[in-house]
Length: 397
Image (cartoon, rainbow, N blue to C red; front, side, top):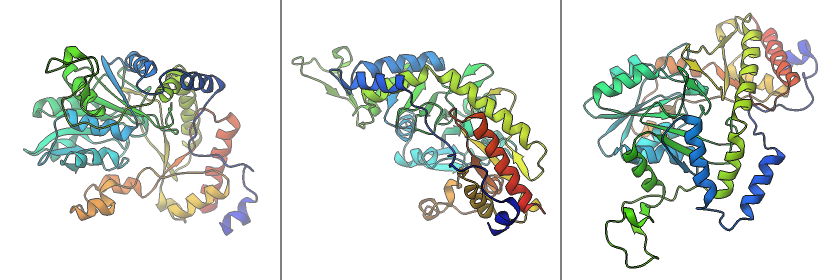
């Protein structure tokens, strides 16, 4: 930081720009207020409407709204029938929930490496990781970019595996023109505030399979059904409901659903703005050899949740931490996504060791996420670019 103070002077801006931020408008506030004034603020009409809207947006036949993206992944693991002794292949370059969902049902995650240019799970590594215990693949659309669906779906079909997409980053993304949510056996979404659209907390699972849909609904709602046509036994009276499986209370409230319905109407606009910012960043960093940008496969029309720069530390005199702190001193907040999952103490205690996925680990050591969200002004974007270039210049070899 002392070096920057000498060479760069004062920060590029006076007010901090965050790496991610929700955009809640007056229209969003109004629909939430209307929902809160309704007769039902949970288990009401907005959740039903939301699930229909999610089907329209994703092209899926069925959607189940839940309380968060982690709950979505847990329900998907239950619906897939995963359990003790099973293995689930996933990526280490993700949030912990992508692997934890296997542990929730007693299965064991197996970590496949990633493609060096795209940071998404490598289909070749998936194939090499398959054993006679493998039952599913949880592939993550990292930063919002679609994985190589055709290859992974082919691998899953050949080996009889359930194909689950962790699409927490990817609402609005398309693969070969088809929306994420309608491509895998199940797709799990998150609506956390830093995602493209938000309900505060919230998630959903989409599927085209009616039997998976039945299992997902049971898993997320205590295993209970309330429609007499679905009962196993004849009901004694109208008060009866029937618990058919052991499920969880992962329901979304009506006012969260109302907010998300409102946000879905802005998805195209939010997506377009994110793409504009990504294009500007790509253009600005193209002539910086110290900065490596994430590449995209041509099949993915990506709504980017994160914009990640990878530092070529061989060309810089600083560590990643020093670069990170220097960006903070410029009032530009960055973040790192993600620590390889099996580096965490919990997974180390299960026997996982560092070095398992060398490509993912090498990428992790140099990456950081810079600000990306629709509310950013053009001036904000240029300030971020200027800060990156200023720090690079200060630490360039």
